[in-house]
Image (cartoon, rainbow, N blue to C red):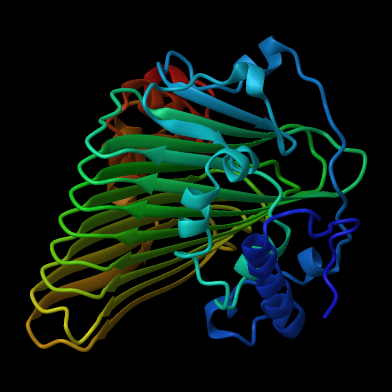
Length: 430
């Protein structure tokens, strides 16, 4: 089956092992093609328009330092990597000491053995999705290796900026993170679309969290209203490790985010939190899987959605407990707020349990703004748009409480309020 990527080719001259990985991905995609609604995991997400569009390689764009700075998180003291239209901006990089942080293609040259040992070892190429296409045509992305016992006191901010392009463009971004034993880090991926051009970002991030390591991962989606974003986050945890994921989907015409966590050793702990806002004709889909493969694992999951106008959202969260994974403690919650009669949510929390000594729970809710609370605020002098904005933000604010970086929390708060406010004066009140 042919793909829709114009002029995308497998690079020549790469190591044999990498060529083989790419060929495996290409062969799988040629056999299976784009996912369709006939597949259970894509039942509610139709990507025919994405599959039929011809996408080209991007043209290089020059941005001034001021233009770039405007899209960084204000007042955040962080290490920094910036990509503009898939091009790594080396002159903007701020690197931590004793840590390998660079573009993936640079890592292939400088640290080939380390990359070979981990690349495409966590994410399943055979998964019915777009991992295979990314594996075949991965262009660029970042590589991060935090050695044992290194604790980064500042977060790492990675910004992917997409500018206005003369024709539809595609970006196959691949990121690899190796967190060694007893290390600690915070990682922020921020995807931002400038202008209104049609583009497609297909990104895949693999993270290995070694024994006793702690990784905090943020993913901010601020693509433009004509953009497609398909992203896969794949994590493998080992003994006594901690992994926290925070997803904020605030933009994009069609967004599909997959998060797959494998707890491959005992006493692993993970938390997945997410907020998605869909309005207009946006479609935002989140699929999560937490696989408890060994005993004494713990997982917590909270996703909230706010859907307005003709927006549509999908949430499918699955907790899988293997036969040998006794003493598991898992809880999953999905809450959704519908703000219009045309808004739609398809939610499906799942538990698949093959062990008999576990504590697992899941639940989902769908509702509207509380009429009594709305009446109370109106009786205190707020007009209806302001009252609705206050209640809607209160619903979303729970997710901000998990953000321990104060500048990042303020930045997200401002972005969310701008999205939700029906009354401009709400920015001064909240």
